[in-house]
Length: 328
Ligand code: SF4
Ligand code: SF4
Image (tube, rainbow, N blue to C red):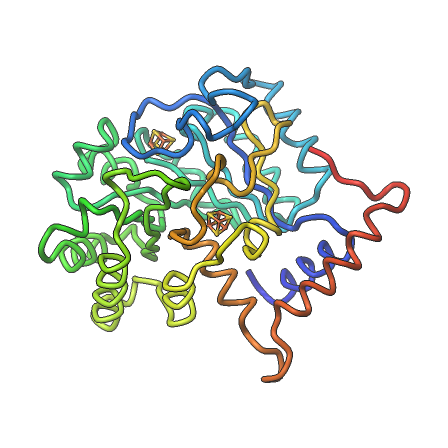
């Protein structure tokens, strides 16, 4: 995102329209990853489980998605799932259209099937491949999207690796050094992003890190950073992961992003995770990045967050004016 995009983001806030859009493009996924938030029963609340939702295919999906995007005109779209590549034919049409509209897109995939080669020529398309730990653990959790298959399916692309750290990964000696070493040496990998597993309120999943494990993971990653430049974990983001927002109201990521599920209408709240995520144990990299930006002081004086709060208040007034309301 460049300076021009930041002004566009601010313009959206002043109009009372969230600048970021996240879309669960399909309810389908051939994987059954333990700890997957999308298929937790509470993910969509009253709407019901994601797999029971009516979603769209073919031209209808293309038309409905473009209509949603035209209504909101976001600066950035995250396309998640389910598994987005299940709809690769529709994405073949949609992704170039979004690029022509000047919208930056992040496609998050398991790389369970080949990523079409032509996509590497689409401007402002970023592909993040979810890889959860070293090969034995990852292959057990994410088959059929195994290491072997991912390496084949990302050939010819420039991808981001996104790793969600679980307790299982953290308990393996040297896991992070081995992980960073393996993926940094792959020519297709441009950046490595790290998130920490985020549980629901009151949940005690085996993936959840204890506070001391969490602190140890962040300390270890900070130690490894100089040796692995592809790891993108600057100090403010580490700080955001160490001190996450305490509620969705404090989370600028949740407040600036509209998350829409596979019926392309219903909202996922309070953030992409849905349900009742435990913000105090949030490990979402995107939330940490936005927190880092919001804690930054403009000219060393005014925190960006204060400016945001003011702009949001203006935006709420503007959005109530005729012709300015957004609804997915
Ligand atoms: S690939 Fe993603 S959506 Fe599918 S089961 Fe795994 S975590 Fe869930
Ligand atoms: S992204 Fe994290 S901090 Fe923000 S609302 Fe979701 S769980 Fe809470």
